[in-house]
Amino acid sequence: MEKDYSLDELVSQFGDGYREAETELGQCNVLAIGKTGVGKSTLINAVFREKLAETGVGRPITQGIRQYTKSPCPIAVYDTPGLELSDEQIERMTLEVSELIDSRRLLDPKEHIHVIWYCINYESRRFEHKEENWLKLLELKDIPVILVVTQTTTQKRSEFIQTLEAMNLPVTQVVPVLAEAKEVHDDFPAVQPHGLDRLVEITFDLLPECAREAFIREQIASVNLKAKGAFKYLSGYVASSAVVGASPIPFSDAPLLMGVQTVMLGHITAIFGLPFDRGFIATLLTAIAGTTGATAIGRSIVGNLVKFLPGAGTLIGGAISASTAASLTLALGLAYIELLKVYMKAQWRGETLSKKELSRIFVYLYKDYLQSGRKTPSEEPILPPREIDIQD
Image (tube, rainbow, N blue to C red; front, side):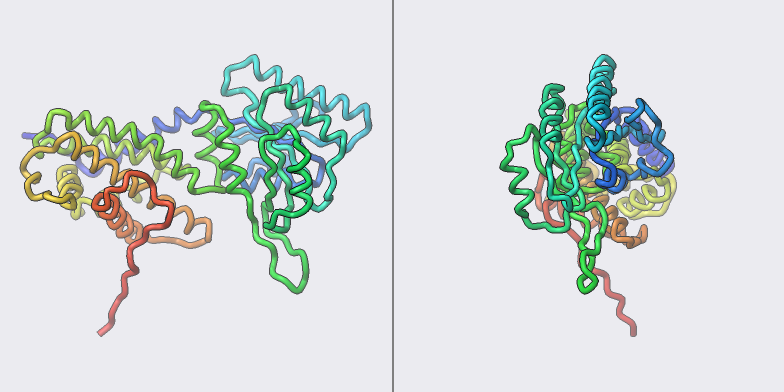
């Protein structure tokens, strides 16, 4: 008798993919430099899902530098005061930063300082000559530097931002941000946070490979960046599913394909930084299978995945080719990435989507990706029409 998978077995395989992805996260280390009151702690807490910069959490590394991290979060932020002190203290601080960078460079690459956020306050409208000199010293360390203009209360390209850009400072980008809502006038609504998504997307592009997955998982400013990271790994699973079908497999052996796909879903979930929720994934799998049975569900799932393909009637009971296996896996992965985008955006808005609604959206997205033939994540949201209950 051919092997089939129970729901519990598939959920366990999902967990295997999730845990494997967690072991491959790597480590990302950010050096944040800026004067007291510039808003570094607020910025750090707004960017990462763990409130890394809570009062009292930072561990002294030197007299002036504190490390913010929380196990098992693979992010470490090194908080450094800016140049607001006496000349003697400034000299000591620049030396401490230089020694920190150099000492960590002797370690494994995942322990290096990977990017520097040099923070200045928009409201000051000042960038001092001594800060420009420090940026020139940092340039010698060959680490990308982003000039983060915190507490920026306008989304327009203001005169101050234009001035900074025209100075040709040794930075990769000048990025204005507002990390939390800010009231600027009693008669007007608070200015809403902005710029964080651009900051994390620019940061990601500057990171070495060993730091990228950790950063994608832990940042909460850009759901599109999470989708980009997940899509990168999706191609590997599509290739694996094609290998499964390299010699067309009898439909009776289709659960072999489902094994690859559930591991893939677990990996994607980990990249998005979501917890492993057995109930959530079980609900999605049973929605695809069209059954609530806990045994022999793998073949039912693949059967339902196949039936939305053009000419699917000739496949059921026949064989699944490499191209068919790849198409099914790609559409399933893209649909799941899109579903997690919908879920996270709702979560960030403070909204709750039921498992039933998420399952309905997932099936709709899968059909849409499979039948449209699109091979990359959608730029625009794809959502099914809302269900309307008609009362007699």
